[in-house]
Image (tube, rainbow, N blue to C red; front, side):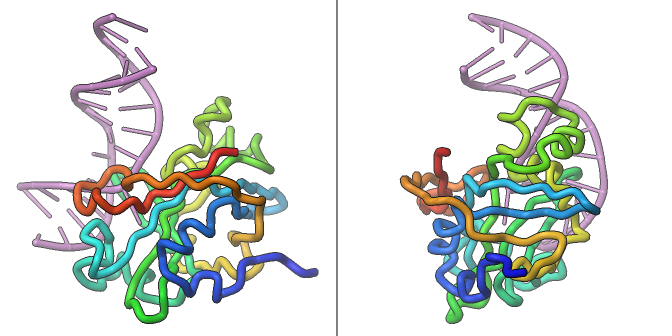
Length: 187
DNA sequence: GGGTCGATGCACT
DNA sequence: GTGCATCGACCCA
């Protein structure tokens, strides 16, 4: 069976370009025989030396080493004592590190399972934040380093047509707020 | 509707 | 020891 997973080269472009191109794409998460999926509606680009807000700005560590590794790989990190955030490694080959933070998705399949995972019924609040969508999709540090170009428990495929993209400063950071590397679409 | 603030653990200085 | 790429509960309106 042919899957429309995005090829490796999709992620081998400038991180900001990939952040925009990921909008409208579909994340598939398989848990047992359940399938959960959603359309990506908000992303943020994080780069390397030119980006003080990036985890990769200082140096390579155990946590951020995925950002320096192969593109198309999941970079999951733990924050605020109780949440995970999900990123996809993406960068121009000339750059040492970079990743795209997935901030929000529009629920598609497996909504019931997401509601159970989140203990919430409200569709609006199910996956409209980076820590919310990792809860809904059951993404934890177990998924650190998963190859998103392959048919596994977690991957990304072609999604829908994207019309208008909105750019803003990134959320929740104090540095480099002049860079408009937050990207959104309306569905 | 909007603002404030506590929860909570891990990576890094 | 500090501070975080957050969320939700609580307050006031």
